[in-house]
Image (cartoon, rainbow, N blue to C red; front, side):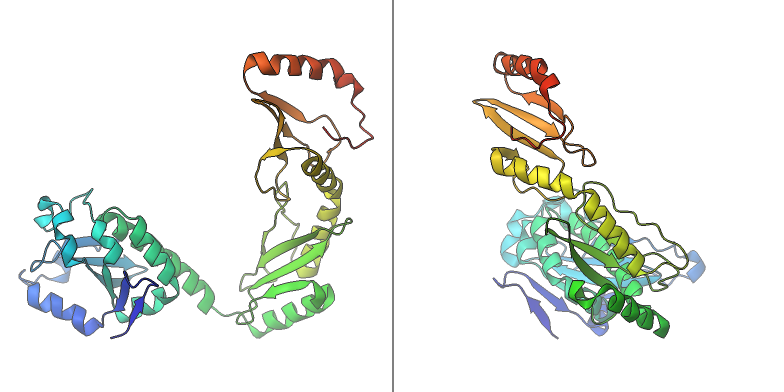
Amino acid sequence: MSDWRSEDETTRLNILSSRHLSSFDRTHSKSPTLDAADLPPPTPLTLISDPQNPLLIFHCFLFVKGREHQVRIELNDADETALSVGSRDEVLPEGFIGEALNRAQLFFDDELSLLLRPQESTLRRRLRQSTSVQEFADELLILVERVYVEHVDQVGLPAVDYYRRILVDLEEIGWQSVTHICTDTLRTIDISLPDSSGRVHTLHLKLPVDYPASSPHCECALPSPFDPTWHSTSGLVDVVRQFEVTLQTYAQFWSEMENLDTRTLVLEPSAPTPADSCRRIALARHASVELEIDPLKPRHIPRCRLIGPERVVAPLRETLNRNLNKWDFAASRSF
């Protein structure tokens, strides 16, 4: 039996072979044999306490994508006093408090252990955050369902033409612009390009297995969603060209926001990204202004909302309204 240990060795995530799991069924099953027609349809999650040790050991049965997996959760003996007396029922009561989860051991069947091995840190985090065994079991089901989708998505390898097309596209784009690529499948690619002022922006691409029949999924930090036009003859080159055009569209906006960030005391956001078009700026003691800038018209009058006690912001509002007609649309100004 192998195990995974967290850095502080308080959480051990172990592989329990199907032989050990099935021994529990043989030892503790006292129900009469049922025909398949008599059995109820499997539920996604069943959680029961162990008949021999109902306070400390729990058996979790997960039914995902037509397959059943078993997980055994063992709590630390020292935490027995923290457990609810009512937990001796076969079905774990909702709201069951299990602080012992921080030092729990998890035993998986062989297949599930392989699927969850890359999720070790996520499992540890779910254990720390859960306040009951039931809550952790619910989170575990969600995690397993997500891993199943990702695993099926990854094992479905594209055809050879897919790889040829990707390499041709990247050659045309230029390898100097490729800042990351998943070398195992060529399914995820990062393209980094500068705008007219030299600011570098990254386009994260996730390609479907039937690319180029289907469009790639695009993620990037822009003030508006980036939704490139896609046709049956489109490719990565077309997406990148549209991304370049979009960068130039927002170049002046980013320059104005940099000017604003440099010349004013920005309260929010604390770490602005290229996607942020709002700023809250300090004006005076207990007074600030929230500006919403139009990314396509960054030098136009922004939407303003003064924040603070009325006695403080009233004179500021009066001054702002009196001078709005002096706004210079052609100039970049500091506030």
